[in-house]
Image 1 (cartoon, rainbow, N blue to C red):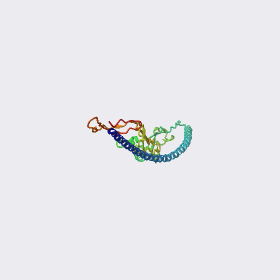
Image 2 (cartoon, rainbow, N blue to C red):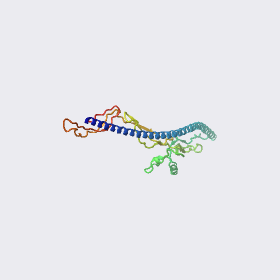
Image 3 (cartoon, rainbow, N blue to C red):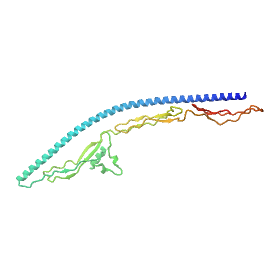
Image 4 (cartoon, rainbow, N blue to C red):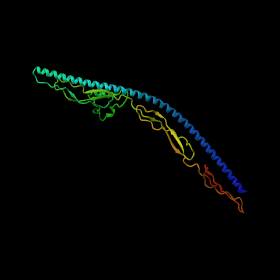
Length: 305
């Protein structure tokens, strides 16, 4: 009878412990579900905002592409006209020079003088300089400096002089040198300008993507056999004007990779109870508590001895 009572007490205690563990696991699962629902809602909100911004960006990009194609067509037409005009000017210059040479030759013959060779001033090719900040370029121009490399010193590095991008642009000089001056000044053409100032880098600066910090990890999608936990981050600045694109805004990792079929984990044995009888073979017993309940097909050793 005493042994049966002990078994009954142990069974009742085991049932109570299992029920408590189940209640605890259910509460944990409910908490995880609530957390995942909240994360899902946040993810949907972030995704909706990102989709809206993506739509706006797509429209802006399409508009910029149309404007870019229009500018390219305009540039191509102006380039063609410019080349045609240059060709006409070269023909005109060559014709004028030839005519002038003939007139001078006829005049020399009439005067019985020596034939003159007309030698116009000749110059080298244009050498483009780096694009400079407008205010700095104006200051250097007053000093007769048109090449930013010549204005570099220990307190003024080259980078501080240049204009990389931005509305309004900067100043760029084109320079060329005399190859030979006119050798017949009264007839030869004077030298053309040796400096040319233009606007440069008149375009928007690239804007790189900027991301917020990662939000916290979501609860694991499974309690065992491998699940997934996820986290997200939002875009705070979208890329524009050729800026660097955004890295991923979603991240996930595996979690709870242990098998669902796990045996229970037990505490150490408790002390032996007093014997049920003082003589003639009584019984004494001891027990140990469950530290972690078994899951799935996992088994639990006896907790009563």
